View 1 (tube, rainbow, N blue to C red):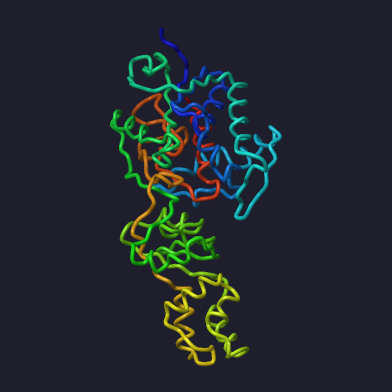
View 2 (view 1 turned 90 degrees about the horizontal axis):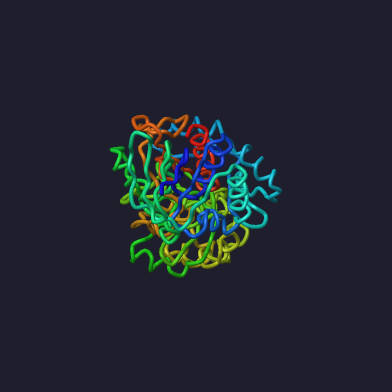
Length: 393
């Protein structure tokens, strides 16, 4: 017995469900296949369980790719406003946090429910706990062998994601499909991921574990201003996750803590106002106490502020705001929010996400070499790439 559809979507994540909705709305018969027990598992855990479902400012500049222009078409044709209209149509309460990030007021499950409701309304079928054992291309399209039988369709959409967070079921399956069809894959690596430090530096920073502070993290010409978090493995927080997508092993990053404050001027003023206080006490007015202690001790500064020369104060200020660090690595796919690299965009049509040389085959979402910044951008790519594929599949 063969189940025949117009469109088969592999993967019931953000991109796959969006694609199924749009294809179904066009009157196409659609089935979504996934090995998981529930749809949208990455949606469920995102944003601390409240799903940062888009970023109102999302545009091509917020994405990394070997071809920075590739994402323009899809992002222009399905915008954050378009997705927000769907959210509001379903009565889902939402709020905007900093930097244009939109979150559910209640639960990420609201977004999953919205998508599955939209799929039902579009008559798109969902088959969970379905393991895929083989993919064949024939004259009539694609034949998918699974643990639940054989499915055939004229269009096949691959939306199985990347390698990030394997405990959620993530695999490199999309890349294996690409290899089967002779398609190039840009080198993959973890993105939006905490950074690790060598044991010697980690030991020195151990007392700072759990401390957060506003920071600017810079790598080359790229810089992000958000929170920095010291952990028992190294460095994390939004600013570190952002820069991790631009960093490569062996390279330095530069950390500036409290970047909006002129630290040297502040220290000079503290010396003038109360020369009898220690440098640590002066710094603790603006930095967490343990962080102030770390920098003062690390720079070997002792005595009162009155005893410190301008040169010594400048040295302390530079240690805080021009701290060069060489991470030893990252925490890897285990904690990475996304996968950098993926299906080479040169082989895809940017308007439809269809493979140029293989009619009826589409790749969408995280498995493609388009990776967004932290803050709702990767969901917007999922919605946009899924939508345009659903228009064409």
